[in-house]
Amino acid sequence: MLAQFDLAVVGAGIVGLAHALAAARRGLSVVVIDRDAQANGASIRNFGLVVVSGQEPGISRARAERTRAIWLDLAGEAGLDVLHRGKLVVARRAEALSVLEAFAATADGAECELLTPADVIARLPALRGAEIAGGLYSPHELRVESRDVLPKLTAFLAGQLGVEFRFGVAVTAIEPGAVVTSAGLVHAARVVVCPGDDLISLYPERIGQYGVRRCKLQMLRLANPGFQLGAALVSDLSLLRYEGYAALPEAAALRRRLENEQAGELANGVHLIVTQSADGSLVIGDSHHYGATPDPFGSEEVDRLILREFARLLPQVQPAVTARWTGTYSSASHAAFRDAPHEDVRLVMVTSGTGASTGFALGEETVAELFGF
Ligand SMILES: Cc1cc2nc3c(=O)[nH]c(=O)nc-3n(C[C@H](O)[C@H](O)[C@H](O)COP(=O)(O)OP(=O)(O)OC[C@H]3O[C@@H](n4cnc5c(N)ncnc54)[C@H](O)[C@@H]3O)c2cc1C
Image (cartoon, rainbow, N blue to C red):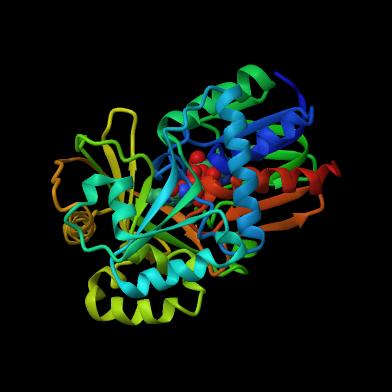
C-alpha cells in the first residue's frame, strides 16, 4: 500500500474509473476511493450504450468518438465484451424521418445510412407490422453489459495498471495534498472528485452553481424474444432527447405531433431504447423524473408507457418482464462540467445520460489539465 499517490480519485463509477485509467496509463500512481462495496450507481444501472450519433455537435460528439475508441481498445486489452454495434433509429412518423434526413445531411451524420421502410425491415425483420416511415442506421454505437464490465474494468485497473482501490470508504473532505476519509487520511498530490449524483457531500456550493438536479429513470429487462437485435433500437421519442437531433429545426414539427399523440410519454420523459444482452434478454427503458431526492418507487404507469412504445415497434413479440430497476444521474442544461475548486483538485460531473459515452475522454482531458501531459 503506497503512502503517497500522484492522484486520488473519488468515485468508482465509470467516470472515476475513466480518470484512473487515463492517469495510470501515463505512469501515475492512483488510488480510487468509493463508499460502496462495489460500484452500485448509474454506471451499472444503465443501458451500457456508447452513443455517438445524436450527441450534441462539438465537444460532446468529439468526446463520444474518443470514448468509443477507448472502449474498443479496452475490449481487446481488458477482455470487455462489446455485445452489439450500431444503432437503428426507426422513424414511425414522417416528421421523425425529416429529422433523420436533416441529421444525415450534417457532418455528424455523414457516415449514417438513411433507410426506406423495406430497408428497416431487412435490418430487423421483427419490426414487421410496425408503422414505419423510414429510418437511419448509425454504425458508431457500441453496447456493453455495464454490470459485468464495471467489475472487469476495476480488476483490470488493479491487476494490470497497479491502481489501488479502497471500497467501503467515504470521502468527507479534501485538504491540500490529502483526502479525508472515514478510514483516515489518504495522501495524494492531486485529487479528482467524480461523485455521480451526490450533490451534497463534497463541494455542494460549487455544484450548486451549475444548476444540477437529480434525475430518476425506470428500466426493464425482458426475456429473450427469440431474435438477434443486431444493433441498439430507438424510435421517434428519442429524437427529442438527444441534442444532436432535437436541436435541428426539423425537430419542432415532430415535437408538435408528439405533444398531440404521445403527451403522456413526453410528460414522463419516456422514450425507447432497446439493447440486447449475451443471453438474448433485452434491456429497455426509460423515463425521466427530476428532483433533489427522487423517490425510489417505480411507477407501473410509467412502465406501461415504455412497454407500449416497445409494442408499437415490435408488435409481434411480447416477452415477459424479468426485472425492473431505477437509476439516478445528475442532470443540468449542459452535458458535463469540470470545475476547479483548487489548483490541484478537479470536480467532474456528467450532467446528462452520457457518462458511458463520454467518460473516457473526460478522464484524459482532466489528467492532461492537472498533470500537463
Ligand atoms: C438508467 C440509466 C440509463 C443510462 N443509460 C446510459 C447509456 O446507455 N449510455 C450512457 O452513456 N450513459 C447512460 N446513463 C448515464 C450514465 O450511466 C452516467 O452518466 C454515468 O454512469 C455517471 O457515472 P459516474 O461515475 O459519474 O457516477 P456513478 O456511477 O453514480 O458513480 C459515482 C460513485 O461515486 C461514489 N461517491 C460519491 N460520493 C462519494 C464520497 N463522498 N465518498 C466516496 N464515494 C463517493 C458513489 O458511491 C458512486 O459509486 C444512464 C444512466 C441511468 C441511471
